[in-house]
Image 1 (cartoon, rainbow, N blue to C red):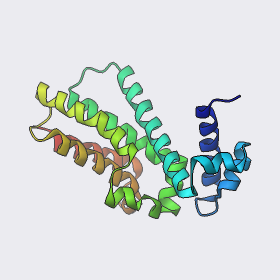
Image 2 (image 1 turned 45 degrees about the vertical axis):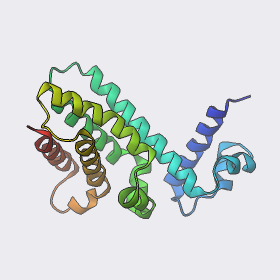
Image 3 (image 1 turned 135 degrees about the horizontal axis):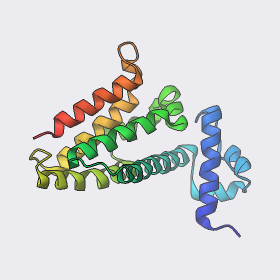
Length: 195
């Protein structure tokens, strides 16, 4: 018998495939159950509706991006300040989010799903990002590469700047390509943190 975690991952994988192919509005929990090869009650016991399922799916995908980019950054073996490493990590996360098919589909076709997490409250993926950023800011303040200030405030603004740049990237399409946008984001983040 598959573990609970494996079943949940299978369901989330099925939801991702459905949303990427058809969008959130045309995805039902029944479709996801069918694609995952599980019963409808199995899905309904875990998620009351598609919105809750997609929220968990986005959280999983964003956590994966954060972890993958953190591991890649650690393996780079680059001698740099904490500030430079944090900015480099953030721009890699931005790149990964811009290239992610699910994130792109939602931003391009159903951005209203992100409204709560853009304007009203932090989600669990925000918390995961802050758990990486805030300690790095404290460390950078200790080594002198990051300016003084409340680490929680700096971390929140840093994270929201990355998020908003990614979610609003279409606003820049007429004036700059993705490479240029990520480069400008890097400059912005570095300037914000620089002592």
